[in-house]
Length: 335
Image (cartoon, rainbow, N blue to C red; front, side, top):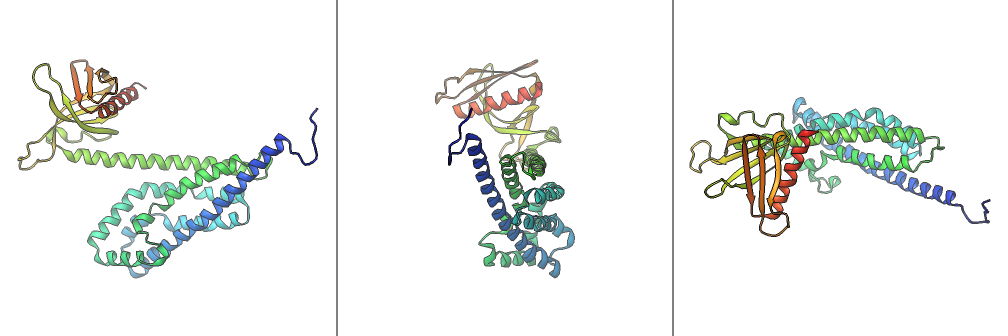
């Protein structure tokens, strides 16, 4: 039989008190950061979007490409904040989840937004002057428009961290437990989709960059639909003769070996000619030497059905990076 002494709390009561302290702390942080977030959304909506609409400095298509669903996201924050200020966390966040698709749209447009900003700053003198003038306002605290544009995506990550913590520290008997749990799940799912969109955009940038480095008819469309992992110089060790430096581009499904074009080539100087594509699904990888982690680099053996490659690096760290990247690519093709 458990004995309770006056003024002494049981372990269960102590746990509940810890939950309540964490919940109160998280709720306070969510409220304070939402106020700041809404303020920044409002500054952009007022001093950039609103004035650009009134002045016509940007045509509607460019304005939409630049700011996407910013005003609707601002409206969603305006709708949420009174609930947070009133302590109605579950009800407010449940309603907010109806607007999460706006963040997916914003993420899908983010690369286009940055491109539009750079293009307009470069070619539109009136827009360039306008942006500099607005950025100099004390309200922005030295922040530039390009710093402010990713704000909703940064806030989504904060939403996930804070709402998940709020749900985890809300007891199952609390009236808003189910609402908070559901909101945490929906926000986490949205954050994961947005992360996936961002990863794909980064990969597309890598593919365009690599494709621009490759020249010749064989290079056309080589990177299309692939997932880029890494690139770098390695020495190809032939059966006879001296090792030859080659540039390698690793994707999840293939390893591309390329040779630099001659520096004096009239049209293709600075680019690479594709010499071979090696399928990762058919690759057997091993370290010939370079296991010890010493400073002398090492040698990797890549065996394919009709060819064997020996790749050397004098940098041990670089060799390890290649070994792990190749191992990951091979395993990804077997799953």
